[in-house]
Image (cartoon, rainbow, N blue to C red; front, side, top):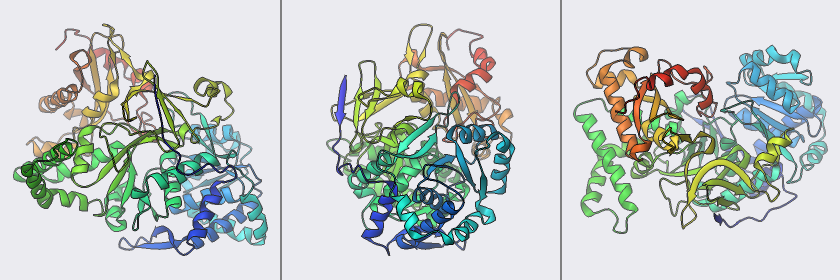
Length: 604
């Protein structure tokens, strides 16, 4: 058993709540910019000061009070990442309510469960389409008394209705909650079973935000720091980073449509962002595809290799050699600077979470001048439990314990976390709470990993996802899957082999990257199904599997690959909104494809 704890830079304040976090920012600089809103005109952004934001929050909170919202009432928010999401979230807190995020891609069945289980009395949605989804289940959730549609001017009507509510009532309500009181119920996206409602307190958010803003000041609190949010605010990761930005004093921007991400990065020019590894993979693969073929492609790949080699050398005692420094300078001039410029030009840090990033991408981005701070956490830990620090990044790990956090890894590799960021429990589900939260406050994360001598955590997978082959070999699929997904043709990978003679992989192709890859390799245009049967595509995937196998022993290596004719997406139910594969559902629905891997059980 190994255990490490990180110091708490900011003491816990039992009276501090989330509205207090915003008011503290107001007291430090009412005229400073809190948010910049996209005007939609040529990439321009309009500043919103702290004072202006607080006035808007208070006005909307009055509207919520006028609508009948009582302290403790639940308000569901179903919207893409946009300014109004943040505005509504804080208005609910100022009115004494509890916010319940709902992914904007949620099905009617999922919406019904969340509204029913949380007891939501009001639903704020972005569009008429979202309102229609709620409308499908409205008869089954009688506690919901109204649905407010942002795009139909619903927030403005609430503000108008609240003009008669006194300032003193909002002052009273926003002070009601203490640190230990419920702030939000976030429903896990659920790779298996029905989502559980994670109860997070005001103190969970406040302590994490204040400690993060202090310990990661180099990232988020230096002059000029700014971040662009594009991850779903329904996910705890984005909501947490938003809190850190507010505590640190760095302006926030929102972009609801990732199809415009590169353009928004170019105009907003963030200095730090947060993303899941799939975003970093897509940016890299898109850059490679844009390089085309021939000399330009060779130049890109040379520069990428130099970037990775240079970054790896930074971790050695000797550091990069003079020749490597010269090659890196040339690669930067010819290629790497353009890649960084494509992300806004000012980006210095990227916080990665949600899944392992992989060492190759970590070194690649550091080599172009963007330090990826890989971290680790769950909804139950209000996002981070560990994160790499700017002063010492160990690529391939998720860093040491987050400020104020204790990490423990037992002799079986099970990871536990403890601290002011750990949740209160699952809503209306004491049995599930008791399974993961002990009397001393230790939370069983369900992940497996190791802690090195410096307290840096390295994850190897989920305990429930461990594969045990017929030969008795324990295999953590995440390592293989992460490396395999680095190939530009690959969208998703599910490693299989439980009770089987060897390890295999189900692979889906990336429809966006396929046309460019085919053209680069002199192949005719074809759809995903045809490509999945083409000899040259299959050969490329076999080579990708071989590269993934370099990270494991032969007994753990992928011996066979089967390409599926359909990708895993949120729309078809195989991905969660946070882009995690629903492994159990895939194994169930594609059982025949798994069986086909083992029709001929002779190993390759």
